[in-house]
Amino acid sequence: MHAPSRRPLVLSVPVVFAAFAALGGCGDDPAPEPCTQETVASATAACEGSGGSYQGRAPEGVALTPCVGADGERVGGSCGVAVGACQTACATQPLVQVCGQVSSELEASVLASGSVVLVSQQIEDGASTWELFFGKVLEMFLVGIPFYRLGELEIGFEDGQYEITTSASRVGFTLVFAEDFGDFSAGEVIPYNVFDVESYARDIQVGVGGTVTNPRVTYDIEPGPLAGILDGSLSIQGDDPRTLRVEAQLDLTKVAIAFAGERSERFVFPVFALPPVEVTYEFGVRLASNAIPLLEFVDAVEGEGVAFTYDDSWFNFSAAVPGYGPFVTIENTLYDSELRLLRDADGAYFEGTYGGTHGIEATFFGAPGLSTALTLSGVMSSREANTTEFYCDAGRTEHWGTATHREDLTGGVLRLEDGTVVEYGLVGAVPQ
Image 1 (cartoon, rainbow, N blue to C red):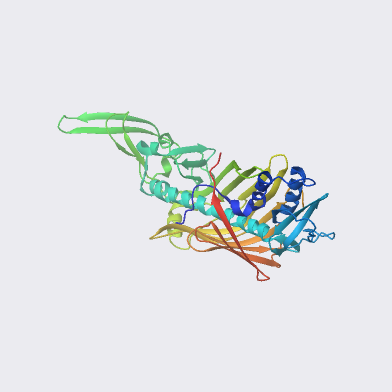
Image 2: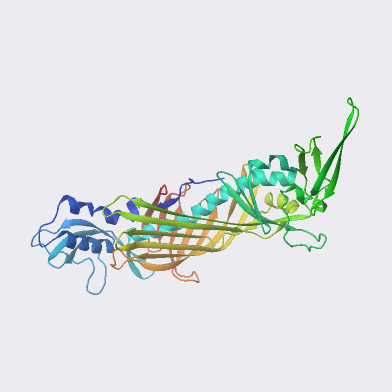
């Protein structure tokens, strides 16, 4: 299964922070009056607000076209930003249309980068989740739960919800009765921990008889509340009550599984630029499925697949300059996801489609930037190519562009309806 880097992926420094790199020139070549350090900083910020990069103080007597006209129109190419008597040169990126708004390629690239981050988080989470489930958990359900070896896993259990973790992975699920069981109806959550031996045997008394050459060990078991969901009885080996080797084989027709897990993380780290930039990156992955009997699960995953969703998963990103507040904010949410978990000779994988929203607010020190919320529709796969379609309307009738993500999910190419092509990329970041 395709598994991107475990490090969080964030919008690339060249793409997101290109606007701030030019500020470093202010310290190297202080502009004389009337261009003070403060006015140059203000002019630079306005240049960045147009999606451009600061080029220095304009030559004496040269009049440059304003980057933003009196009518609010933004200019692509070479233009000027004036703060009082200080005029500076600004090189803006080519302009593109984003659902009726004028945007720079910089902002369009940031927008597309957010979509690949959203997809990569689901695929990365799914890769580790299903590897743990098929490699450890499902094996215990099929072959038997070895209570004497459960120390290899960290098993959390609360109100019927399990969370099993290793140093690198986690999987969450709920077990329910697949058929009526005692006072419980089919579909009700199993309130007892199937990984606790006392759920099957409240007490085990060991009796040793026979002769030295032909010893006979007997076990007197007081049944626990889940003794009736076993396929047979407990498997017990040993003659010392302190070191018994006990295993439980579940009746796979009596137990159903529903996946339900949530994971979220937040990272804050500095980017070394002038002025300094602080990035906040946070995401949440929510996995859910309907209950399916364990016996049917095994057949389904190797046939048409087991359906699950990533609805309400989200990804937020913001970058801010201390003292000025965020200059770009991205918010993404997934919904209407329809995915299927499958397994073949090469292992487990998943594929399907999803919808979502993708919002971006680019303020750049308060100067006007791109501000829009687009609707998403995409194809997600842990093996094949991933794409994201962008629409200007909730009904997905006004198509803006298609982002084709690279196989390693570290970037891609955005192709707009008008033929414009914009590349985007990501870099790894280590949280502070």
